[in-house]
Image (tube, rainbow, N blue to C red; front, side, top):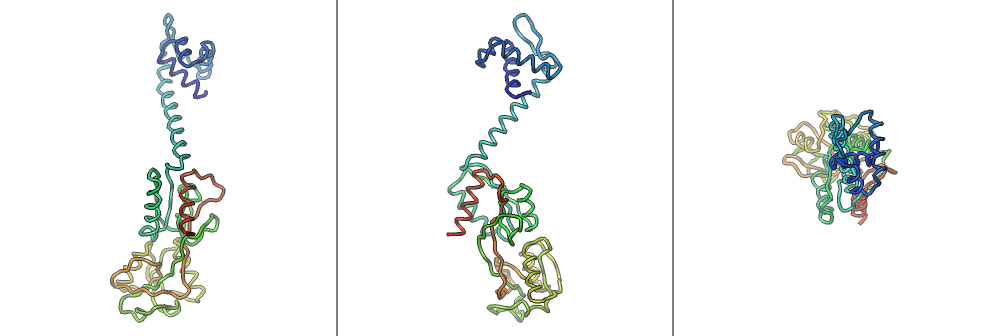
Length: 286
């Protein structure tokens, strides 16, 4: 069964006359008759009953018409969706990103891109670096803004951020310009959970400094870590962010993270996705 024959069936069902329908479709009457007969053989039922010189749908034809209309509508919707996806000035981009990039970098990118491409829409998702990596690898997102670099994905660095040690106001390290991780080795640490990029960076920093931290709490957002530091539960390693009352932040010597754009190399990207990818990379390289 092909969709062209299904469309011809619907046209005959509406016109109730093979000759008139063939003329309207600009095909031969014998060709149309053979196509309808072929469809009936495939389905194993008679679709039309003849009444004089006209045709009327049989009970089986009435049933098939409802499904045929849905088939044709779905095909039309699929073609429309494909046309939209192939339009570089429109369509949708699936973007996954870290929570910490949701306050400045991502909003700025979307605002500036949509200023020039107002018909482009974005399907956004936030999560841990592990969640983001899986979303891109499995095709649930087209691109990701994440850190550190996912080993199996293509990557373009966007920005490098210094990491800070967040301590309660009045802490012995508050007010310092810089601090080494070892200077806070005896403090209780409030850390991100495993699966978050910042946690893997922090763990590597601890290993390089031979620090075995006392863990007071494991959270899922940098804002939570800062809030618990303000409450006096410990200290935290955090990226650059909005200051929090009751928290003093000191740059950690030699500690940083690189934020980058990630995607699956070799996967077909619609023009709208490729356009945004190139925009983000060019902006980072400017």
